[in-house]
Amino acid sequence: MPPLQAKVYGDSQCRAPVNNRPVLCGLSYKKWKYKLKGTINDVQNMKDLLTQNYGFEEQNIVVLTLEEQLDARLIPTKANIENCLRWLVEGTRSGDSLVFYYSGHGLRQPDFNQDELDGFDETICPPLPKGVTLHAIVDACYSGTILDLKHVYNKKTCEEKTSGGLAYSISACDNDHVAADTSTMNGAMTFVLIEVVRGRGQRNITYGELLEEMEDRIEQANQQGCLGGSRILSKLFGPDLTQSECIKWLDSKELESVIYVNFGSTAVTSPQHLIEVSWGLASSMQPFLWIIKPDLVEGEATILPPEFITGTKGRGLLASWCRQDEVLKRPSVGGFLSHMGWNSTIESISARVPMLCLPNFADQQTNTWLACTKLGICMEIDEDVKRDQVEMLARELIVGEKGIEMKAKAIELKKRAKEAFDHDGSSSRNLDNLLTDVLCTPIV
Image 1 (cartoon, rainbow, N blue to C red):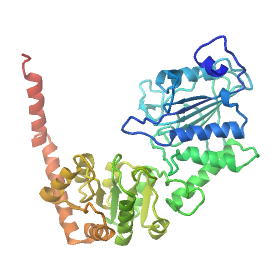
Image 2: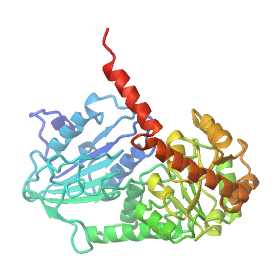
Image 3: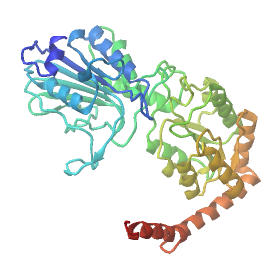
Image 4: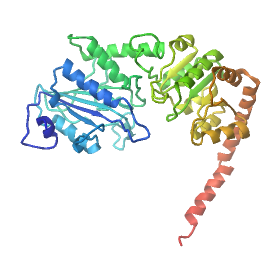
């Protein structure tokens, strides 16, 4: 076992010089519902960058992953990650350079100590000895202030002294946003960072230059859309547009003119169905906001035709995530093309928005039958998806008589739902009765 890795596990007899000490952590969650496909690639690419561009020795790099990991001490559990973070700063001295890289899911929890401006805790930066530099790169959701550094980069400063050392942190997104992936199975931020650094060749690059060039490339993505023709966008899945940008775009459109498209977080489709839906939307000539995830196509990257992107420029907006409840409530949204999960169905009814449905599995077919047959607020696309039908139904949804009829029924349904939820409504009474029965029934 390499000396530095042995030191991670507390072997006081194994003390190698620190100098450059990296910890790389990639979590794929391969047995979980929300598995990630690109994190192992991210870790390997970051390892290659450190060894090939910055002279780090491979035997001094500690890697924690779930993939083919035979050493239980290198599985990225909470305890092992904390152990590696302690090792990262232990025994360091002035002039040492540390690297912590993380690719995986990001979460946040309520701030019970009331020391966070946004009301949530992300993580804590370990104290650094004087003269030691920490470079932290975190490609995860909600990672904006993950090191709790005092200063945030504003093109003048991007650094903060901790208890004596110097810490730099690059995060994939703000504290209230999610990170994006690429069609090459990488984190988008990691992909852009590595490409920018390698593009410099042997020339040094400052943090200010790095962040400005990364920002420029991401801004290109936001302006041009997915596969808009630039070198970086030919590889990236698409822009990670923020919620505020989606809302701003929606508010620029006419009343009830936009089709909101979202097939949920777990549904997958075939490449052919993706093409048929995209061209149907394009031919309908209706504005649309499409939330399209990188793994929407089963077993393949989600890539839309370049002709579709250029043909719908200005009329269509692609993003990887949004707050669906907020989007559905915007006045410009006139219809919802959905997979018909129950949450989406309820949110659409609550916003008085009629639907087009393309169910996939589980309860979605039942929800479709209910919305189409009993409630009259939905039209179903055939299982064998064809662009002509998508085009026809999209137009009918927004400007046709059937769409107007469904809108009226959706408005009435929302009114009835609100009455049911009122203090003396049927839903409130039923819930009260259930709780009374459960809490007051004697234990035999």
